[in-house]
Length: 341
Image 1: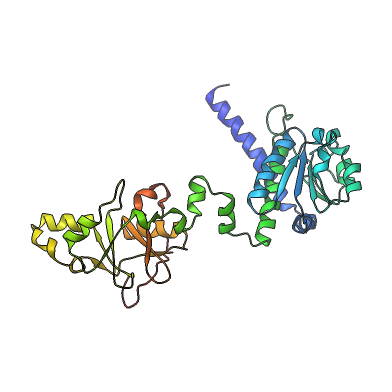
Image 2 (image 1 turned 45 degrees about the vertical axis):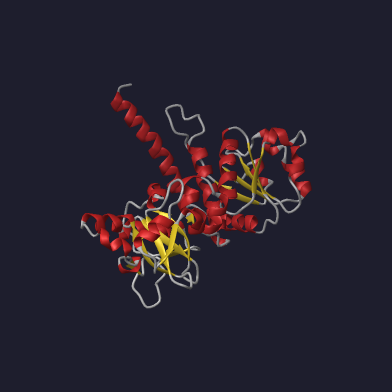
């Protein structure tokens, strides 16, 4: 096969699977609603069972359910008959995957599951299969054509299983009012976890920031605010009530040097600070901070508490990987009393 034939075949395979998904979406019935109800009413865990390729899809669905608010575990049907069936408890629900509905390792579990009295949801092709006939809710895939020249390897069928399982998980999640904050609790690592974190989780703590009283001179501030290691490029200035009143950056200092204004170093820093700087509350989302940094084209963003007292700093170098690539209209800043952001 030449390059053209390879591309054509790949397109046909994808188109076959896409057509199956379109058909599946258009033929959903009220049994899907019944399946949603069974999962929502489950007081324990959702146990997902499948063999072979369907089992691999089941393991992926376990991850989807678990990360979107539904406790879920995978049970291998061959291991289940050797003691692992004890993992299924009263209050659980079971989701069984078998395209044919006749997979021996799956169907031989049905009598035992019936004795346990747990709701059984089947994803299968035919409502007359053994699996469908002995399940409480049947999500029918219909007759599907496997992709590829041979039409034998599970492809279209497993794609349809995955899509239907994802739909079930995400609809249940939506009905449970599962939020991005809930999602963040289950994804604390990596860039995804960072995007869903609060500002207080990612900011540089106050001990890593330079803070000074607004009445001190520039020279006094920079002599007293030396910190070991990596530092932020701004000094947060406060009043007698420890409230943030201004910001003086390394760029402000460089500007004075460029203008030969070294004599100003013994002047109160409040004369040269940026009054009422843009800031963000510690309980806001990190994505809010990233939007502000990008839209306002600033490098440091003071973090304050409900009393406008600084508690930390968000530095742009800590959030470069999260900077948005498009425009956004949402900027959740905390206005200073009597001043502009």
